[in-house]
Length: 472
Image (cartoon, rainbow, N blue to C red; front, side):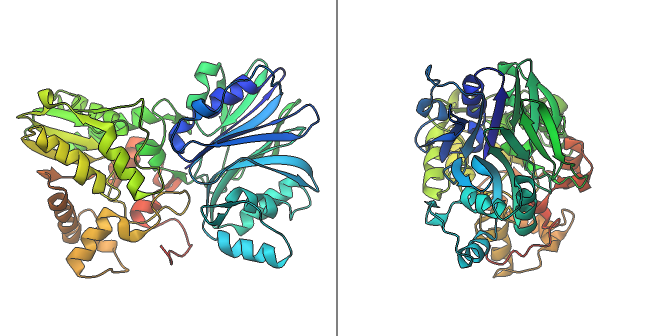
């Protein structure tokens, strides 16, 4: 998942643009970019690789740069924002989301004589594809709507023009967009955590499919939003920053709620509760509050040098980060029985090969793992996440139990079935932990506080879309 930020100012937007974009660094590890309107009314873009560095080390506030409007992005895959000359005039574009039928749409445009020049990781850049689809419309607004008609997946975007910024949330509402205001500036962002230190006040969350324009006259609604919200539940469980809120619901509070639910369903004797840093920490705090057992830090993340091990694209990089970033504290661990809360088990390799081994080597007596969401069964089709069913820990377990891959996994999704219990037991044995108990999906929904039909739970249930999973 990428993070996007835009700002329109009565003065100079560059300080807010720089810091506001940087506050989205937890959402991407590949590229960082900004674009602003220069004195000639043209978008000027700057993109850097951040795969081996932080956004703030590549971008800096240059005193000579003055602009009243700009957009920025921390990207999980594609270099962006990109700038174009078009029939609508010059514009720059950045996005968050995923287009799963990208190749098919690109082939259709190529047949019409449209060329693609931005190739990333051997693929067409999604930002360029989106821009070319929008250019098929009679206006930017109509182009955005046409683009949304054609894509499979979800795209929320910002388009920067000399007049201002267009902001559009994806029609399913999977990825959030929120408006912030202060006296002389209006911002639009993926994360509300980008607002407080810049003195923005949250004004509103865009509705699914809503399109607005931010210019000198303020905020103009160009297309009303819809009520069919399907916001990603994983934002609260893992992806989002603890200080952020989506639909007015705070991330840290939800994670504490998850921990409380996990504790309510447990009755084992332990000495302490711990979390896998960073996102597992709040889940563990909630567990400790409910269970009245002490919360203690047994693992420390060496924050200055290492980011998230889930977001990098290659397994090799993920494993390297997982190995190096967490340091076990033997003085707290040795001889103790512990609950270990984590946000999720995706592939299971990092938990098994690094975290659990570190705890055992440090003398843990018992390790009871409690993920804050159900077993992941399907790759996300709305954001760049796991791209293959086969790599998921739950699917490995099913494959071992059944002897081969099976199409119908409904019995394994049913958290009260015998097959579900067998799957969980297999994963626990594979991880080498004392016990394993996942969050019940109804508990997770209640912990978030939105109706189930307002949340996207596709990665756990496979429900909520008619798109084919063929190729995953």
